[in-house]
Length: 452
Image 1 (cartoon, rainbow, N blue to C red):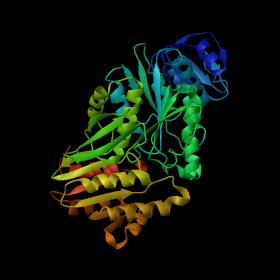
Image 2: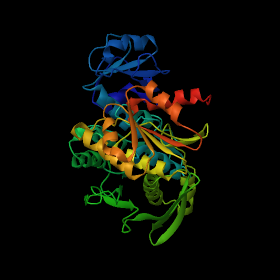
Image 3: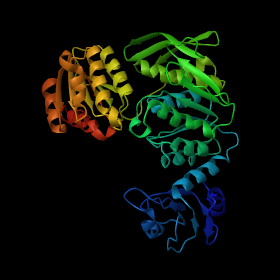
Image 4: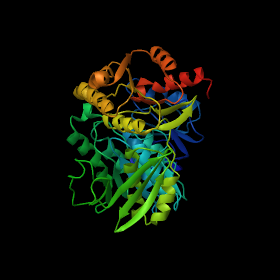
C-alpha cells in the first residue's frame, strides 16, 4: 500500500494538517508501526487510540489519522470517524485496481471454509488474494485490501458481522463483483432478533455490488431459496434442490475424503474433497459456482477443490495416540455443532465422544438451541457426551438418558476425564465457541500424550 495524505484526505473527506507525504502501510497499534506507516487512532470499548498518538510517532509513524488534534509534530488528517476512515481509505486503494475481480462472501456458517475453497478454485487460473485468519470485520477487512498488488487478479474477501450495518460498510469498501451467502443460521441472533433479521443483515452485501452482479446463495436454505431481488442475478447451489444452478448428488465419504458429482448446465463433474461432512459439500458447491462465473473449466475447478486444506482449528482431523481427534474449536453455532456431530458419527471408531461447549450470542434462544443440539447428538448415536460450560448443561439435558453425559465447569476436570476415558480406537470431537478455549484442553491432552 502506498498513498499520499492528500489522497487520504480526499478518500475520507477529512482535513489535512501539515505537509503532504507518502505512507506505505497503516496500523491501529501504536506499538507496531510499519516503515513509513500511518497511525489511525481508533476508539475502542476500553481504550482511545488518540491517547497513544505520541507513542505511535515515537515508534516511527510518519502521519496520523485522528478525530481531534493529536498534539504531535507529524502531519495528520482530521476525520469524523477513524473507524469509517479505515474503510474509506481501503476502498480508495481498492479502486486503483481497475481489472481486479472481487468475491465478497458472508453467511452464518461455513464462511471461512467457503473462502478457502473459493480461493483454491480461483488460484488455479488467477493470482488470487484472500482474507487471512479472522480478519473479516471492519478493522480486519481493510488489511486484506491493503495487501492488493499490481499483479493481483482476483480477491476473496470474507465479511463477518454481529449487527446491522457492518456488512453494508464493508461491502461498500470492497465493492465485490460476485457475492456469496452460505446460509442463514442462528449466529448473532441475540443482536439481530430473528433469522429474518440475519437475512437482512447478510444481504447488505449487495449494497456494494453493481446491479446485475451474481449473488451465489444456498438453494436448500429456507430463507435464501425464498429470497428475491430482481436487481441481481441469483445463482443457486444445493444438494436437495435439483432445480438449483449447481447441485450435488452421489455423495460418498471414505478414508477422510468426500466424493460427489456436481451437476450444472446439463453437464456433470466428479469432485473430491480432502475432508468429510455434508456441510463441506455445500461450501464446495458455492466455490464451484464462482469458478463457473469466472469461466474456469469444470475439470480445473475440481482440481482446485482437491487441494483444499482446513485453516486453523476448523474440523482438522488427526490420529493421535491411537485416537481420532476432530479439532473444531474456532467457533460454534447450532448449525455447525450439528454438522460436526454428523461428521463424528460418520467416522469409523470404537466409541464416538463429543466434547461440546457453550455456543454464545444466542440470547433468548440459548437454552432452546443447546437442548436441540443435545437431542441431535442422541439421534447420531454418540456414545459419550462431555459438556463444558453453563449453557452446555442444556446440551446434556437435551440428550436426556439416550446418551451418557457429563458436565464440566473447568478445563482441568474435563482434561482429567478425557485422560481417564479415551483409549485406542476412539474418536473425539471438540466443538464450542472460541471464547470457551477448548483448544487449550486439546493442547494439554497432547502434552500428556507426549505429542506435538
